[in-house]
Amino acid sequence: MSDELIKKYDHWLKDDSGVAALVIRENLMPVEGQDGVLFPATFAASEDKTFKGGYNIDEFADGKNVCLIDSVGSQANRIEPLFAKKEYAGLVPQIVVKAGDKTVNLLDAGHRAGDAIIRCSALQQDLQDAFKTVQSGDAEPLAKVAPTSLVFGVWDSRDTQAKLPRLIASTIRAFDVRKLTRSAQYVPATEYVDNGLLDEPADKKTKDAYAERGFVHVPASGSHGGVIATGGIRRDATLHLAALRLLTAGDVEAKTLALRRYILGLAMTGFTYSSFGYLRQGCSLVLDPDKPREVREVYCDGRREKVTLEHGDALKYAKAAAKAFGIDPDRKINHQVSPDREVVFDKDLAMKDVSGDDTGRRHQTPRKSVKAGVKVATEPRRSRSGGTKTPRRSKKSK
Image (tube, one colour):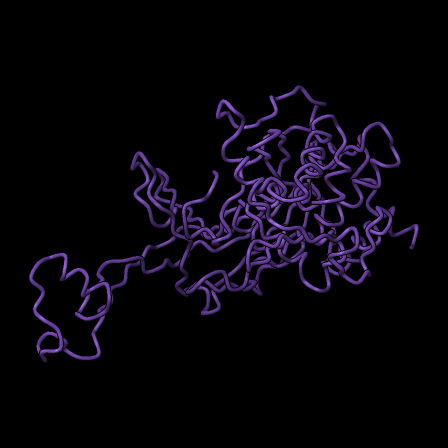
């Protein structure tokens, strides 16, 4: 391991560092061109109906607007599974849970280390202990099991109440959009009723059933037709170094530095990963060749300095930092050998989790006072649906 490489970013990790964050701005455009139509994420209506559902477009008094294309949770959910790919898998423990006929990687669990799928397994006690240790100022045990929970944020809302913020926040927005509508008409393969293949529907219930099953004509008018972004599309990503520096491994400085290096390596790898491209049907984005990508160091005094940070360099650093932390990035993944694990979803643990104790109360550790900066609120993780459905909590937006 190159000593120069492992120390390369230590100036970002020291407690007295003046760098608050790294920021990336990427100007994007639809593959069809600058004036192409793109389809943003759609969301369900709010319970109080103040938001009627559909596209999330904020309008302002001056006539301008901002449209959410991909939320912070959705972006997290696109980036985190990167660490299950062959080139990156060795950077983190590969933890999988067998649930019936399905195998779920912890990297795909909606609530990360706080998810029910992993909580109701043989790792329950390990993770509970790790969360309690986080609350007392030592994030190393959690990093040894579920390090991406430290990178993308986690809330152990069903047990210890431990919270850790997202170190990476990435969002894609479109500016000054023109909203379009579209209409369609379903035409059945034949006239089932007119040709005597089906009886004339006697009531609305039968007519609706025919429509649902595709036996009659069904119009769809005035539905979401996408938007044209006249003010451009931009991905804004932030790596919060100030939050990363709050992570400690107890009072041991050498362990704290190794922990921060490891988490920084993972964070930079995800931060520099291109989390755009094909987002959903009708929304495929590429870089705008006329507007170069911007990467800046943002200092606590407000200064913004250019910095060179490429994905390949971040990956090299991440591998060196992982090795120094005790995670061999070049190992052959074997779920029977540590740090990788395969555990089985335990139905009995799940039923106990549901029923709670004899009084019917759920088992929950009371909130505790913790070291400053360790227990920090984070937006709960939203569904991995890409932002097209109602979020499960507010990602695992993710």
